[in-house]
Image 1 (spheres, rainbow, N blue to C red):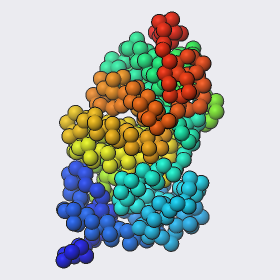
Image 2: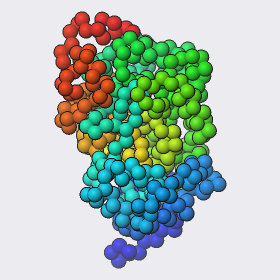
Image 3: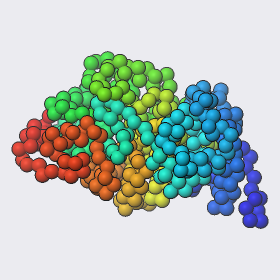
Image 4: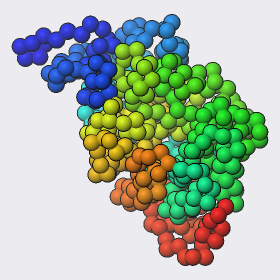
Length: 454
């Protein structure tokens, strides 16, 4: 009851959708609250729902969906025990309590289902999302160590519309000279052809080996193409795949949980990591299930968190929410993109994932770079593991706006954040930066410039 009106919600799935902060994707699907009053009523009701109910009242039936089965079958009751008697509202209070720390949150993560995490986020303010995410610490490693306190990693994204190796190499050198690339040097290929994939993998590997860079490479082709590249002997570090929160949505990407397991095993068997064995890189985005006609009447933010349950199964090095990439049909403006970015980061961290965010938007959205500056700063405060570094913040191959090499330098300076420790030591050795945040002048005879056509 809100004011003089009574609001009724037929199912837990309906309650979750109506409680979600406003976004265009849920309105497109006919799932959103019809008014701010109804949304507030739904949030009040959701706060009183016992967390344990999500173990029995499944939003998508067990027999209908492989992701549901993964969520249910992987739940760890002993880890859930500290909060098993709480309501959603009580869980929010527990998360915000002074005494709840990163050690407790890490131990709790295997006991939380995606739906529990999505539910609590719906009744949290932006400040709550930042504070809780800041408490979470998720550390992973391959050739360097990501997620340590006081650190911010950057994916160097040197895309080129024709996969031209000289253009890509120039962008890699540019990014490295700005201290970017510790998360991964990751190329979105213009084509999935075997020859192009092999060439790009060898290009990245050649740069990393020539300059002894403590980082990892990735070409964001389809998982099956990467498996074929492994069979041909290509030097693959991280195995990439876009994932979603339902079996049907993943099928639209051409993947299954079994195929992901096959890929994880193949990449692990290569043994290319030096300080760790986290070999997977996943990307997600609110709205992907709806765009594939595979949402089962579930709101897009809950489905996004279900994608994190898929990612968690494979202990990834990186998970990246490409938050504003799908378009204004799903996140209409800067306000919705900002909220979604904070939700995705916090929910992923609560699930035990090494969350990064691609702070981005497409030109049809009612957003601009000022909105992205605000989200970037808030994510830095919240302890985001990684962000993107794109030449000029404008990806000319994918056609969207992201964050630039300069943006990462801003964030590291203003918040006192530093690169991954192994990468920081390399930057010092190469005369690129000192103290983690101060870039040094680079002369024309710098080794990266002399041999920049690697």
